[in-house]
Length: 285
Length: 234
Image 1 (cartoon, rainbow over the protein chains, first blue to last red):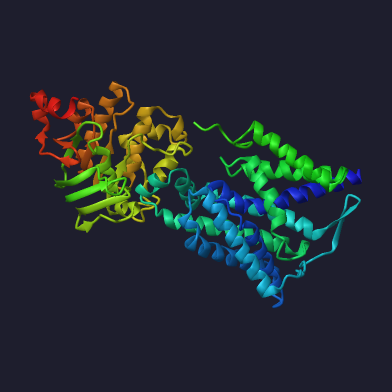
Image 2: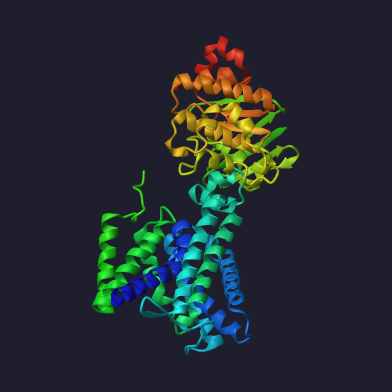
């Protein structure tokens, strides 16, 4: 009984962590169609913001907000300098964002060194419930993932800004002919997606070893989640993270992480083969 | 109100579709632009809207030069565009589609849609329906309504009768007539459907090889079908 509960909690934790990383990608890759290989580095920058600001003993909430704002600003700059020239140039996007990814990573190595740093969790007491003990910070991460996802969907589907962004993404030329400044929408949307990646990195930092390679580990499953979930609707990420994260952690708990990886990739191949536009995707007209 | 001089525009550098076009409109004019396929009708309205990659010459509109302005600025200057094929947002509700028409316009942002619903009662009934699930005629009404939400001075209509059954075209023409009169709007309508042109426009201008030729009053078209065959039949 405790074993199942523990596996269930671990699975939920991994799914929600994945969702946290995905949600920025949903906006940049899913909605804006930019394959951003530097997404992992945005995550990384968020984590390093925590390492840096914890030296000044700031409250954790302030640090999280700062990480969001700082990485959003980085995203804004990168959009203005690079991304805006390569919308709709798929292959060039991969090359350019990979370049950005390398540059950011090297910059972090220059500033902080190649070694791993430590971010401290603001609270760490294990929590006891239903006969098991579980890390309270992990529970906090899960709660944050749910909150951030809900907030993002509220912004996208219940605000004027969200409607504008979705309108621009659905029909850019028509939106501009209706008076919408599409450049400004692109800028803000990309910055928002970047900021979410930074926020995810900041929240995850105390659970991981903060080193220049930490972004890569989440990049692949996050892209896979968005693909499996489908890009037709931002809601696809919920499905994707559930399928990828759930299968991975359950199989890893029962067998080994290696078999889990094999199972997850096989499952992803099957899903994408049967539903090329993802679980939520509709057939193109 | 609108003065177009020596407008050259097109899609590829060195191959202009419009070849030095001139046109003058006064406030309240309502002209139909007719011509055979490929003569530049759609290209002309797109040039006015600022969405063409290649453009030179001059477009003066209400004391503002529009050439080289971004489409959203042209829209905010007071020109609204109902494109060929309607291009409504299929996944948005009727209400959200209308919202898109005013979202980029600080002045209209908090106006109500009531005056729109008065012209188009069907849209009032279907506020929560997805645009993509409506019939062609209803989608056309939605596209026109979306353009009106921004309170334009000049309305550009590109083939509003396309893909709509004849009885609905008549109804659409009647609604447009009412709007033009009540809102004192200036209109350029690109159209092949004489039925709609007769009901809506005061003047017909013909476009040939990227240049607008002298026009005639719409009554003249009724009396003298030879004009139509000169410019329209193949």
